Image (cartoon, rainbow, N blue to C red; front, side, top):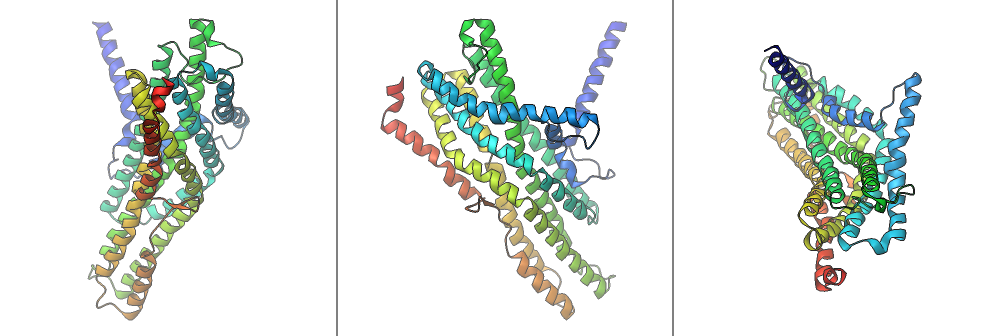
Length: 416
């Protein structure tokens, strides 16, 4: 009976622990103070885990910086080189499916190495952006404003968890499907182990590849999720700003001077949102450009592998890889489209606000405000591609060109 009680207590403790870990995916009560930056809690925990957020001082800082070098050494430098050496030395031993599985990841690894390096070097821009968001948080006027921010924080953390499950699911499924079939999952060159020496060597090689690939996958995930997190935050504050504009001059107890100050505050809030976008724009421009340059070829190779060379379990791993590739750009491009629409909606809200009988100074400021709002918030990938759903679909169409070429030239049959 006592033993049963201990089991029940242990189960309850674990349940409470899980609720504590995942409590951030649900909106906090309005009585609790929440800041926009809390939408990045899971993001920064992952950055701390991978070695991107060192302590500011002390001996632990230098120990931690050593750990910072480990994921970079394996995920950013070793993997790209290891793939190329493997192709040179082991090309004749690859089956078509194994080669495509390795090649699709190899191309993405090169892109992930560039993206993660850019993200790490520009982390200070994320911190600066959060300081600007803190100033917007101080302008939350009522429970409706706070509810929007609370929902946004939960949405950001929830989205990051979804990304984590899918990215980790791809790495784990590829590892298991290939290791159980008697092959290393990605066939990365290892100068110390020959996996053909026996089952022990195979599993050592497979586990080593899985750990190394996990570094690259987590770094890639961080590079792919921060644009989405911050644009979701920007959209939430645009929604708050639209509510403030709707309420301009709606309170009969406020004087014209007070109404004018409310309008000025709205103008300042809009400028702060633009500053947030300008602060993070160089970072987004570089990382998304890299992904736009690779998405078509990676998707094409992966789909060819799924259609022509995969069995069921390897096909599941490849489909998860397709999902990770799509998640790298499509959700962010969608929020960029919505951010453009938000600017148009805000312009309409300004025009439809209660300004007809306002004083001339108020009307002049309102016209100036509307003029600036009509300029949409646009992010440009590498200074070339506007980041939008149309651009994303256009670069992804290259995947279907690869499939068409393979079918028309019967390349799949020739390699089988």
